[in-house]
Image (tube, rainbow, N blue to C red; front, side):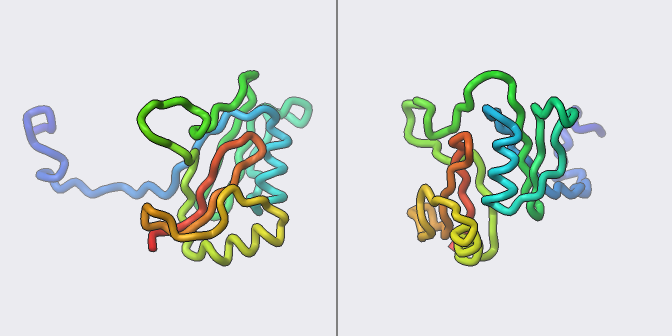
Length: 145
């Protein structure tokens, strides 16, 4: 019997293949500037920039399992907190789970990072902090309490 015949995936007891990461895709004003921010301020590695040294309009940064892709397509970035959604707030553009947000906050302080919200426990039961990147995207670094 196929799934279309009514058998659910759970009923079929199919093994789940691993998914080891997810990468937000940010529209940025200037890819080299954005890459430099993530490298110099947040300690990410630049894993791709191109398509050539003379024409860098796409890039990827990575730190551990966290990866962010970015591209300059000639339009202004629209971070979530700037959107008028009329139904509450959707602040973060990316949530990055970190086991020790206090240690990461200390590292970022030593790198000269300005915090949008300092390290704290929030009303959502998380401990962490917020940073705005070079294009205004709001990143949350934290973990559940």
